[in-house]
Length: 221
Length: 229
Image 1 (cartoon, each protein chain N blue to C red):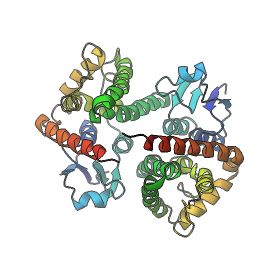
Image 2 (tube, chains in turn yellow, green):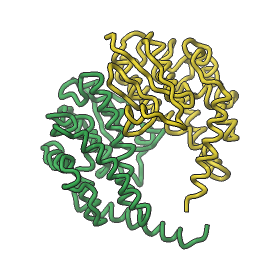
Image 3 (cartoon, chains in turn green, purple):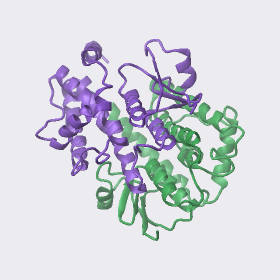
Image 4 (cartoon, rainbow over the protein chains, first blue to last red):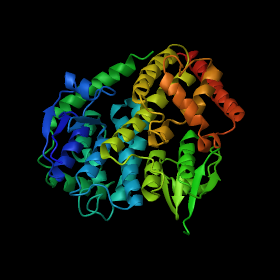
C-alpha cells in the first residue's frame, strides 16, 4: 500500500464525483487534478488515450478510466467500508442497477418536442424501478451508502439541474416518495454533502452542452 | 450439489453465447431454455421485466440478467477456471477492455455492416480506430486473458464468428490480416478452441438471418430517404 493516488476529474463530470465520494468514504488520501472538460489538458490524453475523458484514477502510476470500473477497483484495493455487498447475487443486482441508471436517464434531458415526450417514458420507468428498489431501505446499500448509492448518487444534485435546463419534471416527490426521501438523505451525509459541485456551474455547463448537442442533431442530414 | 442452473438463450444471440462458453469452460451443468424472440415466453418477461431480453441466468430460482453482470456472477460463484485475473489492476483493465469492446468495437462494426453510403464509411473508420487499440492490447498474448481464454475474450468472441459472416455478406474486409495480424490470429485461435468451436450456431442459418436484417435495413433507409422531412 502507500502508493500515490491521483484522481483526474472535473466539476462538470458527475462521474468524477462518484470516485471522490468512494475515496473519501474509504479514507483514501489522494491528489485531485482538476480538469476542464471543455479545454482538456495533455494529461487526459496521456492517461486515457482510448476515451480521452475524466475521471481517471492513477494508482502508483497506473492509470484506470471508466468510473464504474474504477469504483470496483477501489473496493477491491481498499477494504475499509465495503461498497459492494458480499453475496454474489446481491453484487450482481448492484451492478445491474448501476449500469441501468447510467443508461436510461440521459435521453430525456437531450430530447426536444416529440422526441422528448417519447424519451420521458423510459426515464420515468427507470425512476419507477429505482423507487421499487429503495422501498423500505435507507440507502441502496442498506444502513450505509454502497456501490449503487454512489452510482446513482448523481440523481439528488444533478437531476434537478437537468430538469431545469431540459424543461422537464422527472423526480416528482409524490410519484416517487421513497426515491425522493433517499435523495434527501444522500445529500445530507458526509462525505457527500461536503463534496458536490456549485449548482450555478452545473446549470451553465449543462445549458451550453444542451445547445451544442441540439445543434449537432439539427445539422444532421 | 443440487444446484439448479438454467440459461435462457436464443439459437443465435452472441450475448447468450458468452454465457454458454463461460458455463462450459467452468464445467457447470445447466439447462438451456431456447426462446423465440419474436414470441417471448411469460417466464422470460417475468425474469427480465426491465429489459425483456436474453440471456438470463437463473440460479436456484434467482434470475440474473445482462451478460457482463452474469459473467461476473458466474466467476464469483464458481471459482474453478477463473475468467477474470486475480490482481485488482489487471481485473480492472479486463473490465475496461470488455466495456470498450461492447460500447465501441461492437457498435462500430455493427454499423459498418448495417449502414450504407457515407454512414458506412464513417463506421469503418471508427471500427478501424477501435481495432487498432485492441491490436496493441494483444501484443505478446495468445488470448486477451493470456495463455487461457478469459473475460475479454468471451466478450469479444462474437467477432471470431460474426466478423467473417459480415464480411461475406457485405464484401467488406473488417479485420484485415495485414493491418491487424494479432487480432486476426486471435480470431482463428479463439474460434478453434474446442468449447468455442463446438458451440457456434450453424453458419448457413446465420448468413440467412443477417442477410435478412441487412435487406430490411436497406429497405427502410431507402423508403425514408424518398420521403421529405
